[in-house]
Length: 510
Image (cartoon, rainbow, N blue to C red; front, side, top):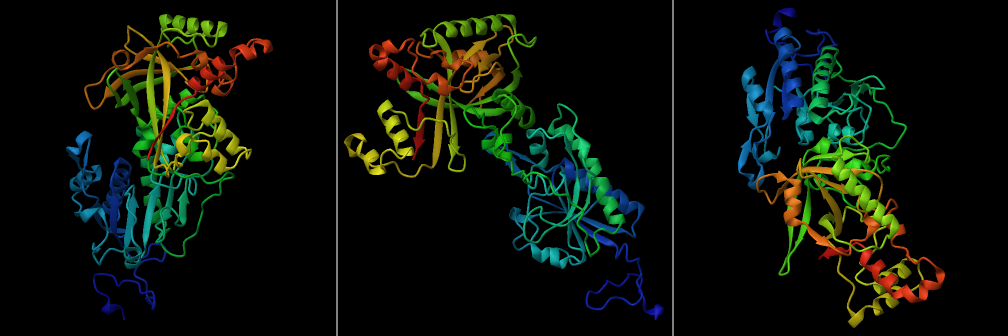
């Protein structure tokens, strides 16, 4: 009986479908959306939905916006910054609410909402809300799912040097992040990533595309069940894009870069180039500097900025004076790898935890050559753990479980008086490149030229040796340096002393 139909269309019932559908089955009921977002990427999707709402209210009847609470940022957490999408929602005149205590616990959604859309929200939408919404939830993810699942797909696409990427529209899974049904996706091979792209430029490229795909998916009724999965299966193991934490911005002097760790694949680029690439994507990187004085030793947190990679000594980006100084040092090392001379160095401290594996080649706790050889013998199965423990002087017990590890390494630096930059060679892996650091910020104080900081916090040593300039990795540098077999007996003790001293110390915190 058509005269019973009210001005507001009846909601479709799951148990008993309407005998006469007011709207086409391709569209379903008008969408009353709860939009959950935060950053610039999600702003594009919200603006596109709002435009579609104005142009076609029969498809999108209303939009409510939910944001996470503002959080203190910056050093000392003194600055409170509101998420960008909050101001966009106000400009568009949309209802805006904030998630209390940054959790969905005891938060209740308005009953008229029938679709949840989460874009760069950063919080898991619980099943109770997805079940309440008639059409569940959708998500715009800037990757070709299932590759690069996680909250930072743009970061890892750039860190991993991807040549192509894309956008996927998926359903919100009630079980875990980024495991829903992919409803729409950029056709393979994807969108080319322009050379030297940054997070900002890649966001500007993909955000409008994601917004357009979202609106197109709603217009085509992809949100209506049954859902069809259109995702692809990568020919390689699926890579993940976890949250980029503070530790990811630490300079990996002795360990693989964040891109290598995320893929479990060796990087084809030189190690120093990986560090410069990491800075290009993530911005300023930090490390610890060990400052030694006659009275005490301090570890100062240093933020390094304006970092770049110099391919070789013939590069036009390398000042001629620095190129001559590095070439002279390399020549002296070839003549006598064990030569001791005055060398300005910076001593860095890299910090890791149980989840970050110490490099396999790293010599374990070389407080003495005797202890080092005992540990090697234990690893080879030549002695038992009881014999190894008995060899410790004073019958000391084995260390407790280590909560973190610290690697200390010295790097010679070459300052440029004109620009204030410093140039470093790879302290372990050798190679022909140089790492340029232009600016440093020590313990939150004003930023200064790196050369000024190095002159203040660095020191000059006489036992640096040529291993840090050598083209070969540390393994070869640690081998005995005798010139003739008949000299072994004469210089054996000196060779052992230098070999032990050449090892980079490992310091543990308990």
